[in-house]
Amino acid sequence: MNARDGLDFDADVERRAAPASARWGALRGRRGGGHDAADAGTRVEIRLALPAHGVTAILGRSGAGKTTLLHALAGLLRPTRGHLRLAGHTLFDAAAAVDLPPHARALGVVFQDGRLFPHLSVRGNLRYPAQRGRTGGPAFDDVVALLGLGALLERRAHALSGGERQRVAIGRALLAAPQALLMDEPLASLDPPRRHELLDYLARLPSRWNVPILYVTHQIDEALRLADRVVVMDAGRCIAAGDALEVLSDLSLQPLLGRFEAGSVLAGDVAEQWPDWQLTRVRIGAALITVPHIDAAPGTPVRLRVRARDVALQRELVTSSASNQLAGTVRRVLDREGPYCAVELALDAAAAPGQRLWALVTRRSVHALGLAPGAGAVASFKAVAVEGRAVALRPAR
Amino acid sequence: MTEVETAALALSLRVALAAVLLTLPVATAIAFALARGRFRGKTLVEALVNLPLVLPPVVIGYALLVTFGRQGSLGRWLHDVLGWQFVFTFRGAVLAAAVMALPLMVRAIRQAIESVDRGLEAAALTLGATRATAFATVTLPLMVPGLLSGAVLGFAASLGEFGATITFVSNVPGQTQTLPLAIYSALQQPGGDAAAARLVGLSVLLALAALALAQWSHRRVQRWLGQAA
Image (tube, rainbow over all chains, first blue to last red; front, side, top):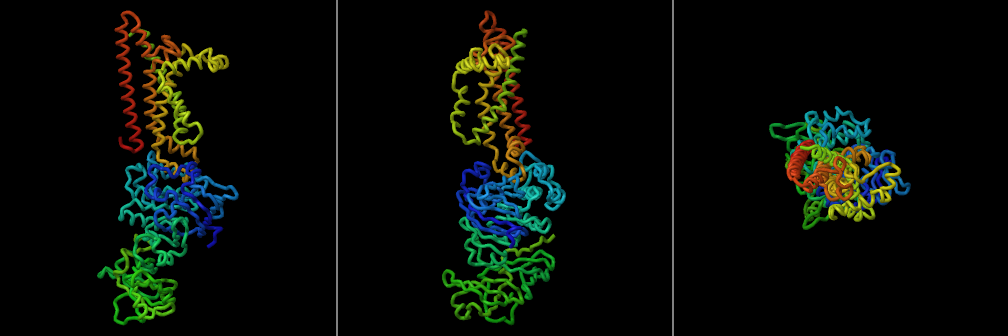
């Protein structure tokens, strides 16, 4: 990671810091939303260096300080200490008394509640940044086409659905010619079908404009779908940062990621479709596994989440098997509550380099199978163990 | 209608309009300071602005006379340097109406400012607007309904202003004799009842017209802002 080109965040921010909120008035919004309220009074102490490309998801529970971090970057909150740099530009430096106002920070922000201007049409909202001198970013027509806004241009914000509103908000942020896009739970206010629809749109952004995205969420499936890197925050601190697959598969972090079932993430690509069975074959390295149907063409990269409690371990490949099997080496054995142990398997380098799989097994099995670090083991799981819908990293269309 | 009565009607409209136009920017600035500002003496400013609401209008008229009359220090300076005279003039009538309308207008506009979602201003800042442009392009347009109702309130208050006006600038036909003052004069004269009744009828018509205009424009603005009335 080269912090000189990317984002270098090393600062303390106090959410309640009166000077900054009085100055920009960002936080007392009447429709600030539940999340803002939950974050009230958070103190954030962050050191974070990120490369300036791809999508970084910032995960954490409500009140972990995610929004505070975003607002500090956007200039809506003033840190009490430290510095913020982006792509070689200093946005804030307490020691050097540098504090760029929000309008001078070449960033695009998508708020949870959209914040479209009600007195302007969709077109007026989209033109707003250009009229304020923010030009040189993505072309108007390209943004409109990519986000499917053509039919909405003359409408007002109040005549839009929640999903449409967020698409306009994303388009408006893109048209602010940002060096980075900051998104604060942009899907939080949407119902599940709209969320999936908008995820499709979001997934297209990075490849289209190469603008780095900082994506705040507490939904692990959004991170799974979008993120190249994941930062985990808890109680105002950044406690883990790294490759999305690695962080999302780290069982020790999962209590901090909120309420979802422990599991790991595998990356692969679609090998073939078995439409008659409504199944899809996915290639994980050299191995093939079978999962419920994924709507994607062969070759499409996908990520799969496998619940740890659905993974069984053996010492050797089982011959007569229709189930999914992946061989590897035990890396860690963690004690869990009750009779259980969580076993982390590093999948065979030849088959799936760098990938991990967690299995939740009884302590007795760990003893019986001799599952100590370094021991070889084979993980098997049923197709239905793949959680919900597996996600294609590129939209099907 | 006699010439005096037509003059009173025309003068009332001119005074009210001028008072509203004069007060609107002042009231907006004060309302903004009170709604958003944090400064010493905020309570004092608030109290001063509201004085005309709680004091007898005659007291306000007297205070204006003392300040802006030829004997008053400010009044003498304005007269000597700018040639402005207030007592017995149209200018004075406008000033009296404006002062009396100020608290009502500040109140309405302040409510409008407080109802603007500050998150929208923050969004404007991140989209390249300075604080000043964010105010001009987001806050101000969203305040329009409040400005409008403030203006209507001010206009109505100015039309009805009596006590401060008669104390400050007296009752000069064509200069300071607005409708309420003309009604008062008519009632003072023997056989003036008919004239008074005509003027009262005019006042009622004027008030109804102003209300109708206010309703209509309010609905237009609400539709424009996308908040179906």
